[in-house]
Length: 203
Ligand code: MG
Image (cartoon, rainbow, N blue to C red; front, top):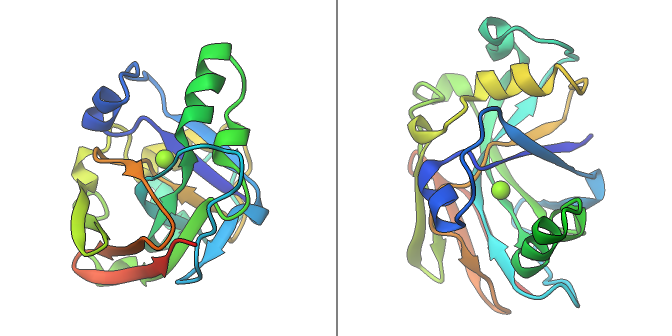
């Protein structure tokens, strides 16, 4: 499986990092070795500088798809969850400034936290989902999927023009505003529509 991650999908987050608003979805990949499964600790990597949390709605692809029309994209996922796209922020800035790929800042081991999934039949409209992150019991990020610049179906349609989607692939749909650094012993809890989907410690 692979992780497909969308960058710059919420206007206020684009403003907080002083990025340009994209005309098409911006995406990058993480390998399967990036996974941190449900509630296992996240280990801060050595020599990557500041590591930021980015809490994101995630979507699990449930069938093979290529060049998927947006109107059929909802047939390609049943499960929606919440994850963290851990990012080495200083490294990412250096990559952007140098015009280099972002992988060193985004694809490192453990950088893709995958929480529990919910069946979309248990949820309201996927573009009307509220989610938040508690860092040491304090709410630090709050998002609403209605604020995505590119909807989940649009993302699936766009990405599948270039990359075949396979069963088990996971899409990270971008972070809302409020990203910030993690430190050893931090406790992160993520909630989607009031349901806790991840709960882990930073080591
Ligand atoms: Mg992200």
